[in-house]
Structures are given as structure tokens and as C-alpha cells.
Image (cartoon, rainbow, N blue to C red; front, side, top):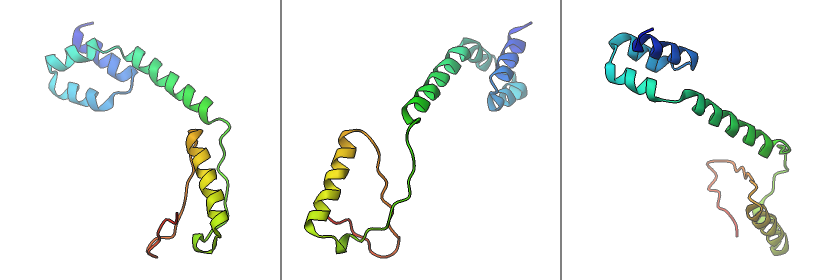
Length: 110
């Protein structure tokens, strides 16, 4: 099997269709060298490890429906409570999502 055929087989194996098309159209020697120099298996292993870590990290996370809160109607104490909750979430490196209706000149209250 020559280098061109080896490169084609590697690209097919790792589903690199755009590069495969480019190589089949041009048979570019430089591209063949680049394809043969890449350790696709190592890239696949890294990708798999990243996906596994993501699954572990977010395995217990849930998305929950929340009630609508009008910041203008909250007391100073309630605002402070929500701010404390938000600060805690940030310190623990968790995420919080705030959804506001658009087009109503929403301003974040502090």
C-alpha cells in the first residue's frame, strides 16, 4: 500500500471526510505527509477522555423549572438573599441561568 492509499485509509477510519475529499481531488503530497504524521488514535483517546470527564462532572446535574421573580418587587433583604445564593454558586464553580423577557428594557437589579 502506497502513502496515498495509507492516508486515504486513515481518513476513512477516522471519518475525516473533508480532508478525504481534498486529498482525493488533489493527491497533494504535502497533505499526504501531514495526514500520515498525525496520530489520530491519540486524538481519539483524548476526545474520549474529555467526554468521560464531562459525563462524570455533569452526571448529577439537573435542570429545574423556576418561578418568575420580579426584582422590583423584592425587599432589600430578599435581594440580599438572592445575591448570597448567586455568590455561593459562583464560588462553588457551579452555574446559574437567569432568563429575562426581551424588549422590555430589563435592567439587572443590585
